[in-house]
Length: 75
Image 1 (tube, rainbow, N blue to C red):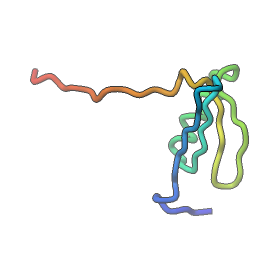
Image 2 (image 1 turned 180 degrees about the vertical axis):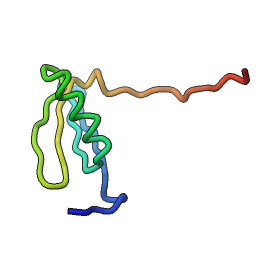
Image 3 (image 1 turned 90 degrees about the horizontal axis):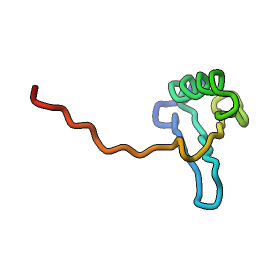
């Protein structure tokens, strides 16, 4: 099934009361990255479910990161 780029969403969900984050995605690039992590680290990353256009993953919320923007030096 073909979906538009606008519909290829990714939702990360976690709360303060649990140690697990969930990711729901319809983006094929995100699925490939998370599928690789599931294959390489099956004790940490789990595929929770899937249908014909989306997948749902689970992993420790400590692995969901916020980063400051990178600065490029003038050199």
